[in-house]
Image 1 (cartoon, rainbow, N blue to C red):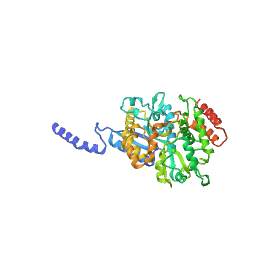
Image 2: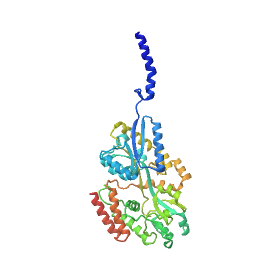
Image 3: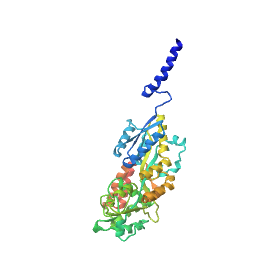
Image 4: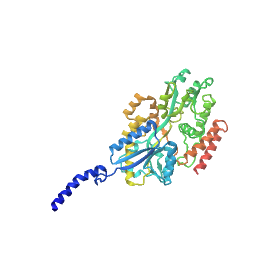
Length: 421
């Protein structure tokens, strides 16, 4: 009788267990739940479609991890991250604007990546150094770049050719840019030679910094403790803008003249290549941004950086594994070709496949790729947004003739130094 009960028990286990397993009521001990991560970012459009496809692929290739890609609007992401810093709901990892990194790193809410980096085989030296700088606080690294862009020269070839200039021979120095812009300007037709950003805000600061760096200056001191733009280089950069205006190469106006076909040239971002390729009602090309004969090539950079906020060690490790994967040269090559972002790694910028892709699909991106190595990062201080606002307000007063260039730089330096203190 005991043998009969034993046989029946075995049959019950063999028959019933698979049924229970299939309904989810009972799972074998070996089938562990995947580590679930939440990933916040503000990429939308083509960028959003691409990051979702990459996350889906990562999940498929890593069944032990399940990443939920969550879109948060650009205007909403920083406030949500600030709430997370204060103890609210937080993602396991996020990608955010690089200018927010100093604040986020100093907040104490991000996980230092140094231990993960040291224990991995990631080629940190392959990343452009200026991109890494914004992630460092108290000698620790709190994020890695995942996308970037920069500023170069756009040329309306229709207007330039109509002015008797050769769009295939763009200006390469400030002196040539002045001549080119002055000759192309046509006040009677409302055409400016070189569009400048002349309204208060980050747009003005972001563009002026390029000229400042080209002239050999810097925005803040090396230790980030005080203004450094109040210098011979800073004055030279500002005076060059005023000279463009005085020469008739630019008439002060709201931003956006180039896209309307009313500017011969403008310095703008690599992201505009894709936009104007679809929308501009005129022919245009690109070139490296001219710089002084005794100066140096330089541009400004933007982009997003990815970081970890999870308090759980298992989720931290899983988040780091995804960061390694999405910032790898192989994935970045695909990411850049799909989105038009600039390379964050030198090995991607110099990859023959990437160079061939640009030549065959959008050669107007090449100046941006070639100049990424000369891109500077904006000062990695948590007060940067406030610094930019007070600086641009003073520079705008010089542009409108309400202050001399030196007075404007003096006033801007005093305001910036006060904020830094």
